[in-house]
Length: 124
Image 1 (cartoon, rainbow, N blue to C red):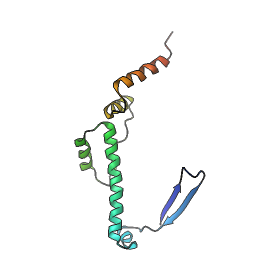
Image 2 (cartoon, one colour):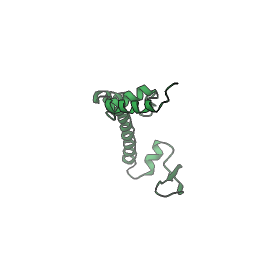
Image 3 (tube, rainbow, N blue to C red):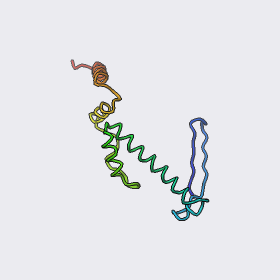
Image 4 (cartoon, rainbow, N blue to C red):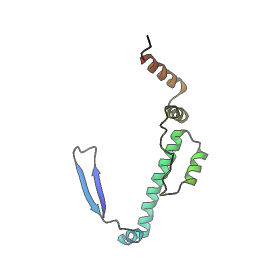
């Protein structure tokens, strides 16, 4: 049995916890549904597309070209964790990613840095 846990931001304090038999393996999952193979394949395809969209979105945000994004998709193996694909933790890398993605211009970045530097106490 799969646990179905649901909360909604639109209904404060409400949570639903239910169960649904989704099968314990591929054969059981196929056997559970009329047109089981088509249902299971469709669900697999939907989940794979969402995962690949996420990989593509992250690459776009890093400033990758279409060719680089396609290369990431070609190299990705479903079910295998992608190492090193987390968002940059180094502040400089994050700033470079923002610039590459077009989320901020050099001028906007310069203005923000100057404003923050003005907030810093100057040594006596």
